[in-house]
Each structure stands twice: as C-alpha cells, then as structure tokens.
Length: 213
Image 1 (cartoon, rainbow, N blue to C red):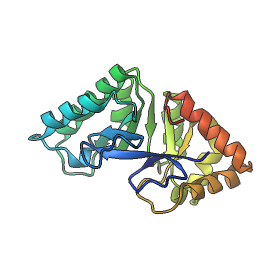
Image 2: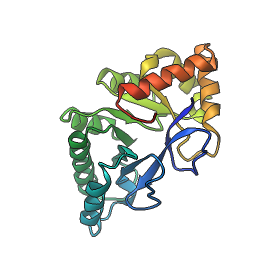
Image 3: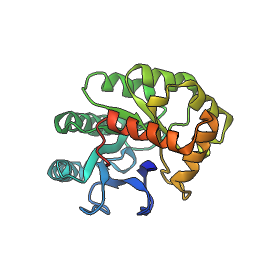
Image 4: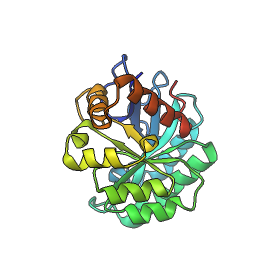
C-alpha cells in the first residue's frame, strides 16, 4: 500500500491519497481529505465564514487532518492575519484530535514555537530545507514529508539517509508524478525493498493517528 500523504492533484484510485481542500473548494464526502486555511488565500473579509465551515466539517469521518495551514514570509497576506488563522487551526486540531499538515516558508522557528503550545501531531509538508532543520523538527516531536523531486537531490538524499525512518512521509503535492516515484527513490536511498518502505510509511501514518486505512 503506497500512501500519498498530501496532494492537490486528481486522486488515483489505485493509491491511498490524502487530498488537500482549502475551505469549501472541491470538498467531497466520498474522498478522504485534509481541510485547512492556506496562508496564501486568507482574507479578513471571509475568515469568519471559512472558520464556520471548517468547524462544521472537521468531525466528518473523511476529514483526517487539518491543513495545509501555517506561515509564509514570502506571501503578501498580512502576518497578523496568518498568525490568527494558524493559531485558530491549531486549536481546532487539538480539540478534534487530528494531525496538522504544516505549510512553512521561512518561518520554521515561529511555527515550532507555536506548535510547542499545542498538543497536536504535525508534519511539515513539502520539506525541502536542510538536514539541521529536519532534525530540529523531529527532535521537537514532528515529522517531515518529501516529494520524489526533492529526494532526487543530494540534499534530499542526505536528509532521508540521516533522519529517523519513523519520521518520514511521502507526498506528491503539486507534482504530476505518481507517488510510486517517491517510494522508489526512498527504497533506493534506504537500500530496502518496496514492501519494507511501504510498511515503514504505513506505521508512521498510524503513529500520528492518521486513519487512512
């Protein structure tokens, strides 16, 4: 079983994929998904209604996680609005006992400080930074999720070799490639069979309470 931890693409029914939904866009009760308020799309005029929508759907059986949500220093959305939305979603995740899919751009320290105040499982999705940053996230109790494209880089290979195997997830995000490509990359890096990699990722999924199967 190959798990795509985070995707914005049309779901391949032959794979187990967690589809990302921003507010009501593309929400379907027929597919497992995460729901969240992405920092890029925040608007103070619509935030109240979006919060109400999230509160209404968060306990549905097909909603498995909160996110993606987080902080982004490269987008033009006001920082105070990003902080308000992110804190609120962490509170919602804590109350609903669902893991958080974290969007982070140049804001790792601020995000980790916030996460330290909440009892939630969390995964930094689309991780493409340094080994030191990955280690810091894991030592704080978090996880990282990587794409095939990143795992093909020397930096990605080094991170996958040097962090704990029980702290890794795989995803396609916006990439049109199959999640199988990420599994193949990781199997080559770890020098393990595909079955072994599938078992490790499946166990990691259970560790954070992500009920995908």
